[in-house]
Picture: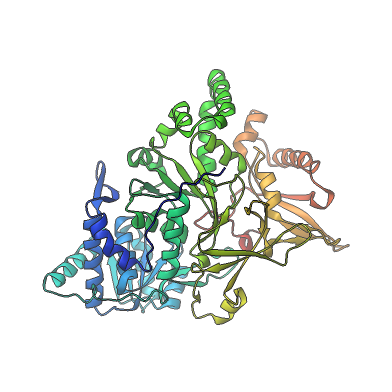
Length: 560
C-alpha cells in the first residue's frame, strides 16, 4: 500500500539540543502519564526538563562527570529522567536488564566499571546481594523508596545547586560521535557483548522513526516492553520526546487491560508474543457465540475495501478494549505472523513490522505508515544503506547495514568488532531476500542455517513459522541433528504443545504418550506439504516453555 504523506521534521544532532528546544516547543505539553494511587497523573515537558537538568547537575557535583552510570528497573518516569540526564552530559548511561540474575548484573557492572547505580526499590534483594559481590559501585540511588540515597534528594540537591548559579551540567557540549550509551546484548547466542552507541546513532533513529510512522505531538505511546532494550527506549520513549508526544507506562502485564484503556495510546511497540496474545483473546471473544462468530467473519471479509475510519466503527469493541485511539503497532524482535498482521489491519490498526539489532540502534529496515507489506521486514530505514552479501541462487543473502545508526563497536572487544564490521558495513548475521518493490523478507539466521548432506539449505525459522501456525503447538524450535550411523543431517523439532487445545480434543488431560502421538500425527500432516529435505524426522516434546530473552527471543544455545 502506498500513499505520500511526508511531513516536515526537524533534524537533531544530539539530545541535549533537542531537550533545549523542547523547553520552548513543548513546555506545557504532557510528556508522561504516570500511575498514581488512583489514576494517571500528567508530567509536562517543563517539569521533565527541569528534573533532567537537576539530576545531571547533582551527578557532576558529586564527581561523576564522564563516569559509567547504571540504571535498573521497570519502565518508570525516574528511569527516563536518569537516562536523559546521564546521556545529555553527566556520563555514559548503562541500562541493565532487570530480569538478569545477580552474577549477570555483576558481570555488566565490572565490564563497564559502573560507579553509580540507580535502581528501583522492588529489586532491593538483588541490590543487597550485588553489594556483597561488587566493590566498584560507589553510590546506590533508589528511584522510588527511601533507601540508600533517595532519588528525590538527589533531584533537590541539583535544584539547589542550580539556584546558586551552578551551570556545570547546562554548559556541557555534546560530541555526537562519542560513546554515551553502553548496552549489553541479550545473549541469544552466548556471552553478552557491550554495544557502544552515541548521540549520532540515536538522533538518526528519532528522525527516521518520526518520518516512517508519521509521528506528532498528538501521539501517545503505551510503554510495555522492557525499556532497557533499544527497541522500546527508541520507539516507546525517545521518539515521543523528539516529536513532543506522551509516554504512558504500563504498571505490569496484570494491569495491561486496565492501563491501556486509561492511557488511550495511539501507538505501541510490541513483540509478536503480545500481539498474538491479543489476537487470540479477540478471536476467542468473537467466537464465543455462533452469531458473533459469523458476524465477525463477515466484517473481516469486507474490511479491506473500507476506510480505516469505517473499520474503527465496525470493530469498535476491539478499539474500545485498547483505549479507543490506537492506530499503530510497531512490531519487532522477531517475525510476526502474517495472519495476525492482516487481521489487525482489517480491524483498523496497522501492524508495522521492523527489523534491526542493538548494534544498529536498532531499526535498519521497516514498514512505513503509508507504504507497507504484510510479512515483510519493510524498506531501508531513512539514511540507512542495505545490501545483501553472498546472494545464493534463491536470491537470499546476508543483510549488510551502513549508516549513522551503526554502533561505534563492541566495548573493549576489538576482535569481535572486526568480525562484524567491514569498511563501515555491519554484518547482521541475518538472511533475507528482496522483492521487486524493494521490500526485504527475512528467511533466517545465518548461524542457525541447517545444511543437509545433499547441500540443501534449511532455514529453521521458516519451519518454526509453519509449526507455530498449528493450533496444537504452543511454540517450537527447529534444529539439525545427525544420524548415528550415516552421519546424515536430518531435521528435528523441539515442541511445546498447546495443552489447553489438545484437552478440548480429548475431553480430558491426556497422558504424555497420548500427547506425543497426537503431535506426531499433526507433524505427519505438516510434512505432507513440505519438500523431502525439509520434512521433520524427529520431534522432542517439552513440558516447559523455552528459555527466552526479555524481548521473547528463544535462547537457542540454552535450549538445543
